[in-house]
Image (cartoon, rainbow, N blue to C red; front, top):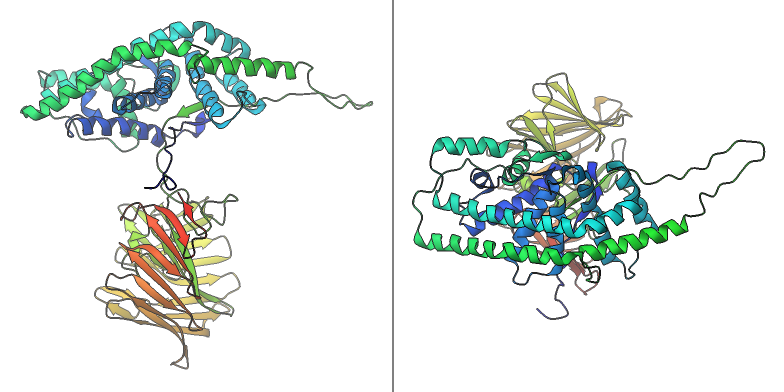
Length: 611
């Protein structure tokens, strides 16, 4: 890799958001990182679910976000070849958030954690050693939502008590590291004596860890039990623990080396955290509090003259100053996005210029082959979505969908709807006569009968789907003006019925036909063209398609004979051209349907975008 193309590694990011915006999936993601590290260090023998029964019996404040982030910081430091100040500071801040003593100061310490992370993040983003007024306002609201007092007093008290707090944090951190080492050895070498002891330990580990907590008055009796509870609450729990009776010698050495490294890190942790109260060391906790204290002092001077207000001579007025409201929380890791937003509903840009989605890294593109006007106008637009692996056997080629090939798949007790833009939506299967409303997409799903679903898009459009095996396929679309289209499935390929005809009508009368389109399929059940049919005879060809041996669409011809071409690897699009032959290229970070597009560029080098 050349210096020009080298990617600069970004420092770990921390999300500082309103407390009510933190999702248990985000907390579980951090716990899963610690669980994955345990397994990688012990060849899968030690897991979070197992280690909680053997170790971790340390009381900490009920701040699950700080706890799982502290465990993640220990993993980062353990894996680091060179441990830097930022990593130690992050661990110190997170340990402050879970210190159990004194209980009367627990709320203040929990409040301090997101405060310090916000100041640190602002200092990274700013070239000036100065916090903005908006940040101070946010911190005032955060403080008022959690404890009573002024920001000035809170900061000054924190500065005075910082050395003692860091000493306590260092002691707790060393104890947690020691418990990790004890737990790894106990699970790996089978050091627990009896099944009764195991059950008792499991019950104790699960106590006070049954829910997502952020409460200074609550506590966790087992750090690993609390983290495992968060992991399981997101549906990521692992199997029950199994004692390892026979352990190979080389495995013993691997585990022993890991625990030696951990135990050596404990004393170093105390030493490093004790240095973090120095105001002169940039990015230390003392330095962050100094920056915050200076900013608060300046903010007070700016607001010393009170609130300006216009006074009406004949009316009573009131001047108010409204501070930011709501408690903050910080989280060191967030769960990956599971779905893409609807680009038509959101005002913000959610993809690159050529449609790499920022949330998922998926690529989507839409090409229109023909348009036919009428009471029910038909615009035949194909959409490719790289994550649409449910359509790998699509009539239009792998991962292509259109307005007329949408469907519902039955999965367990629910449904997955594949919309025309290539996104999928999970819904419950309503009982007959009942409905489900999706407020985000503004659609209503009605169960008309055992074998029929009605999808309503407001009052303007209704789509009818009929059951065929484990799917509900589109059979009719009707508009508010009385126009509609009927879809027939007369072609057969194996056990599947394929789209054969589209017939538009008007005035809610199926006999008043306006357009009739017929499809042609190849020996593999793929659509190779559509024709306009008049009086039972094909009048003109509207489009034509060619596929490769893997089921990928490689060429599409529109109603005017212009051609798009496509290239794929593992059904992931790597190149496509428009109807003038100009091409766009894509690079992927994997080969599965969840692979992310990491680069796109035009043939001439323009529009080069790297993610």
